[in-house]
Image (cartoon, rainbow over all chains, first blue to last red; front, side):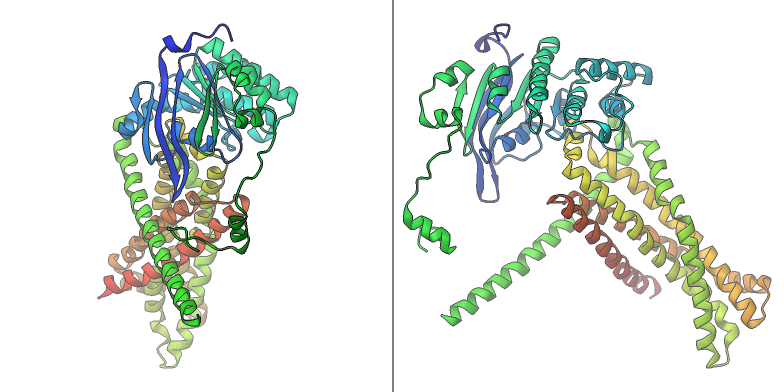
Length: 278
Length: 271
């Protein structure tokens, strides 16, 4: 990734400070802070339950945070009015894990939807723009198919095309290679790199696939149990000596450390009150 | 020990009742805000260049209204004939069979046409609305709309809302016409009354108020069907099974709301 600009000197498109998220009394994210720079691919990694999907939902503005700030493209997302939020959303793109294509529309209509809703372009121009984006993701000629007629990899690529149709400043990708065979997954990684280089946007990818993460990352964030374990370049991550990181990199499961009494209580289904008494 | 256990059970029960109440209140609040938001997008959306899709409104009208014409007509005719049969039977006790025209005219327009149409549309379109929104929620299509800067209420709910508010009263009117006609056919055969005389008597009996009593009610039913369908669809959890559950719940709650509202409306409007 030698083409990428030096992070420290470039503009920050996304700044997260002390983000806390909780569902009921369960804390999912506990003081998460990270930055994403212009033109950078940031990978957010972590095992299941680490809070990475929740973090992504907060970044996309789909959840209400408990505390902390998220500044996107220079704007504090909590301070925006409904209309300002809509305007901000026009400048970000999201490729969802399952594609989230509208099943009642063709691929072409799916991709044109943001243009139809947000621009005054005539239909012909919108069709041309949609085809251009389909070319970018190697799906040219598929615009008249329904999403149900596409394969898993094609759905993801169509979702990418829809996500970039408004030329967003930031693109969020949720598990782009989940559920795909290695060859298709690798092609998607190449596509992400190509989109960044061609369109110059910042890309935030949430994934648990190590190979793919190391291949495309400029910087990586590792989440564990709602806290940030590590932020840095892939090389720094490889060199990191901490046991948890090494376990993650070598796909080792962590030893369960706990006291036998607690284990017994769990088996018996006993709950503790606030002072820790059964 | 036994007393603490029963104490716990009582506390547990109270907690469950409390939670159910709170959930119900939250649901009501959500339905209210949904109506307000729909009206906002309908009337103020164009100001912020966020218009409601006219094409979608017509598509929904076709689906909800035109598609329901045969079944509404059939049900309307059946109810009209049924009213005639029962009316003649019960009035024959007093030897007042000819008064049946009053009964058919008033009960059809004030009660049966809106009620049957409402229940039918709840089953046909309220369930479809809940299922469609439920599946879209699970497939993250609603999230996708939100992150694209497209308000899901404006894009998905308002077209169905307009279509229902226009079409349920229209279908009710159709049901009135067909029901009165079918009642007239039976009365004609049974009591040897000409259709012209039946129509004359019906028009003489009915006031605009009677007709509007039913139409206003059907309008309220349309709003109920929309908000209950949408609220259930949007609250889906748990995959395909969840969609089935919210669809069923939407129909049951809609019918319940329709019947209860009908009773309240009748009480308020006839006193």
